[in-house]
Image 1 (cartoon, one colour):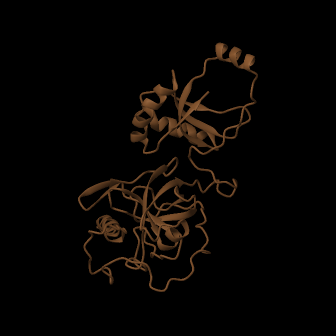
Image 2: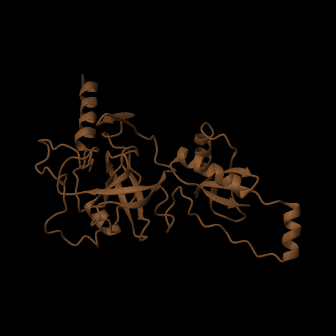
Image 3: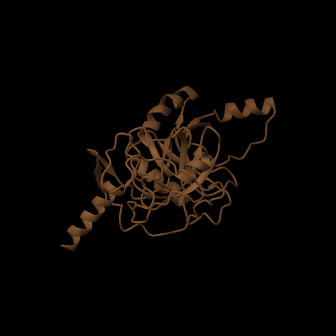
Length: 291
């Protein structure tokens, strides 16, 4: 009996607790306000601190293997490790303020939080507005947005910080943060293509020709870079079943990053021709690199 009650609570929290800033959503008695909006007299949220990533257990609620909202089934990820995505972000405000989120926590539009359809709750993530470069670190503790062209719903405060309040939506990059290493690395440790590569010394023209003849340049598609090899190995293992091309872990001499790459390809055009196909599989556009 208790198991059935728990399942019911989870389902209700997902359907009613998720934010779903879809303009077509019908209002229910759960919310006192039928139309979402910004607060009439908002405080200054420019100084609200980022969420602080810390290792925590998964929420008791909001993490079923799958759930259905508005006729569509969503599948919850086992881990946020390696998650990087580009897409449209929206935000939610007064209508949901104070109400229970899918994880059970009350929604506070003045805190740095967010909602996502599939990442485990909670997940900490860096969200960057790709148009102006502004970023914020949020705690994902809710489900949504249940709208086909959006990948994350931000709190009012988070949306204000990265500058998408006025237009309502904005194009962003979402990067999951590994909280176990957050305090050890000043620039965060996350699975992304942004890990810096060491610049190689510029050879003379004669030396360059000799090197090219001895070791022809090959092209790879770089999916992600990690501060620890074990995470790179986990990603390779996960991708082996869905990617036909060879996978490898590359690390330059004295480089602290382990790069997950697909290839080699004979030339740059071959790499680019597979780039779009791979982007559809992993929901992130890999970077073409020459080595």
